[in-house]
Amino acid sequence: MTPPEKVYLIDTNVILRFLLDDHAVFSPKARALMREVSGKIRLAVIPAAVLAECVYVLDKFYHVPRDEITDTLSRTLTIPGIINADKAELLKALLLFRQFGSDIVDCMLAASSSEQAPVVSFDQDLDRLKALTETI
Image (cartoon, rainbow, N blue to C red):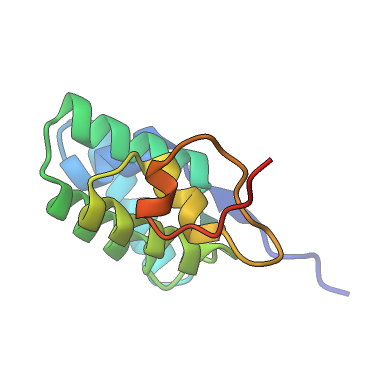
């Protein structure tokens, strides 16, 4: 029996160094890792919390426009070796982030909501995002 293949969880700082190419030591290492993920030599997951942190840092610290944030993070999520089970919801959340200008966490909740898993919140912005909500 072969052991299960190792899957790496990629942290925010690796994604930022990869996207921004702004560090002499870490950016080349991040690019090399992402090349391996692109070639499916390594499999990786970008946790939802990491994606949210990337959005916040790119938006608030680096002042990257929302369209660019959405495009670059969407491309990153669709690299062949990125195997997130929640990839469709994260991509939908990024589109909502671009379209409505809402907080990324609200966009993630809206994207993940369903009849079987409605969002319970007092935040009226979720209505605008067309989240399936339930009142308490």
